[in-house]
Amino acid sequence: MSNTIIVAGPCAAESYEQLSLTAKGLSDALAAQKRQLDYFRAGVWKPRSQPDAFAGCGEKALPWLQDIQEQYGFPVCVEVNAPEQLDLCEKHHIKTIWIGSRTGVNPFDIQEIASAIQGRDFTVMVKNPMIADLKLWIGNIERFRKAGVKQIMAIHRGFADSGESVYRNRPGWEIAIDLKIHFPEMPILCDPSHIAGNRNYIGQLSQLALDYGFDGLMIETHHQPENALSDAAQQLTPDDFVNLLLSLNFKDNVTSPAENELRKQRTQINNIDTQLSVLLRKRMEVVDLIAKIKQEHNLPVVQPEQWKKVVDLYLKESLQDNDYQDFINNFLELLHQSSIKRQRK
Ligand code: PEP
Ligand code: MN
Image (cartoon, rainbow, N blue to C red; front, side):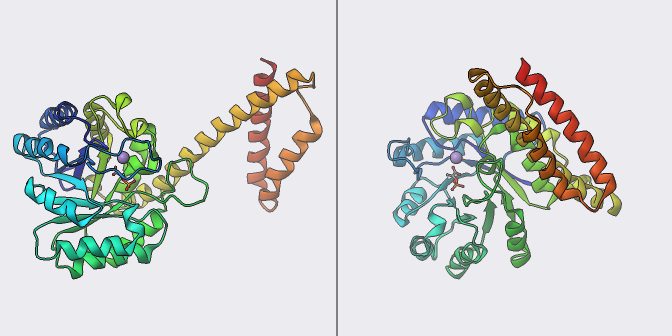
């Protein structure tokens, strides 16, 4: 864990008490592991999709964050989406900002912030734009480089474009890896919280990110996630966050090339299994709906012609491969039996 950049803190600053309890929880839990946070995050100006959603506390949260920074000694970072916010951050000694994925889609906004930052001492973390456009992400980073920013990091938070994903945002790992190839010296962090949208997936996404060679993790934490005013489903308590860190396999632990290769392949398997397990559960939910319709209309549970269509669909994929066909036949038998059992119930 030692070389990995760790950023944690709530989605949004909600009150002094919430920031203070979260920072204390993080500080205590990490101290027990002889570790400190690299950055404490909290959104102050929150760009939201819905007009009535909580949009952050704005300027009044900055003195709270300044206090947290002084008390706990970890640098605070906030999202900035307009040049005047830089002045307010500076006034409160906040020297690290991140560019959000929504701001990242507008080069005019990025240029305004980059021009305003010229000659000032800020560290800038640039999240990927919401759309899966590598050139736009690279261009946003270039604007800050041209403005003379010395410390720039990238943050991968997934893409809000179409495409099947069990997560809130499609990971699109290949785009983040291409960015790493383009800027080999620049640290790239992963934000599994915004990719996942659900705290249950954060562990597996974090491990994937470490296996892909990311340099850090930004993870949303809240002292009471269920009461959070934004992104409640994806935040972790400080204790759960530290337990998650302890469960991860950090890359300094890798010993042999074979182990490295194995980890890469296991990463793929983990990714596929995650998607499979969610899809199978979703399939069962649809089976329940079908059972209800059949019951209401007094239809039989087993409808052989419908099942034949399912079998044909799967077998189309397995024409040339006998072993695979055997596997699919066994798998379908199990699927069919459990579906019938569930519908009978
Ligand atoms: C955030 O970090 O709270 C945030 C809003 O991120 P994103 O821009 O990735 O949605
Ligand atoms: Mn958030």
